[in-house]
Length: 249
Ligand SMILES: NC(=O)c1ccc[n+]([C@@H]2O[C@H](COP(=O)([O-])OP(=O)(O)OC[C@H]3O[C@@H](n4cnc5c(N)ncnc54)[C@H](O)[C@@H]3O)[C@@H](O)[C@H]2O)c1
Image 1 (tube, rainbow, N blue to C red):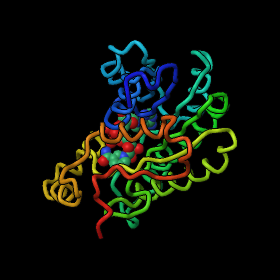
Image 2: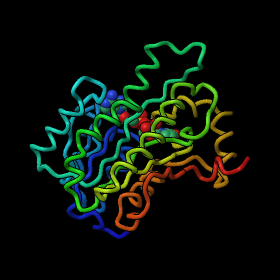
Image 3: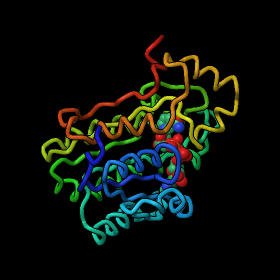
Image 4: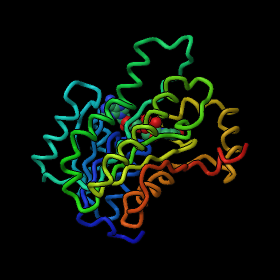
């Protein structure tokens, strides 16, 4: 990818104030794109993006009623263009089937699944107007595996896989691709509580054939590829970004 490959492209990244979303938004900015960065946390957004002229910050809780319509309206009033939608915002509350409350279940579905569906639906008219619309959803290696304490999280990430495949079927006729990223163990605020356990951290370092945990930039590079012209015949697939952690039995 050379500098400026995304000149004149407009990108929207949710959950951009931290971790993977922040790295993805910065990667697009460094390639010349205009990037609308959306998050709950406006002061973190400002800290991250104040020095980027082409970043536009929008504070929004994606789980409140009308969040998607509010964002779509804001985009329509601020340029009215969108080429690349990155549905990144997500949470990972630990849970097992026996102890998962209705409230925890709903919280996880609301941010990891419902927000992704509604925002994509509301922004579709703008993506259809693009020459090369791209949807990139954040799944996980837990989009096709399961793990301890990941009952609700794993369920939502399987839903991301199914939803993205279905989006790809519906949207190919508009020239829009829809794919999902499947990060493995990436060092961010979300994963910190898990990696504070030294045994757990060592397990994932050893499990990756690359012998390390991932960094948010590892995922950002994959997002750039899925957003590029070079990926125009790739749709409906999940791309593992896990250093080889799950390929080995
Ligand atoms: N870190 C990992 O190891 C890992 C692995 C696989 C998949 N993922 C996925 O990558 C995505 C990003 O994760 P991360 O590790 O960068 O997390 P993170 O906690 O570092 O960042 C998530 C961001 O989303 C924002 N957010 C949360 N709820 C929101 C809401 N209701 N409205 C608006 N913004 C909200 C947070 O404020 C935060 O800035 C998630 O979908 C996650 O499931 C992460």
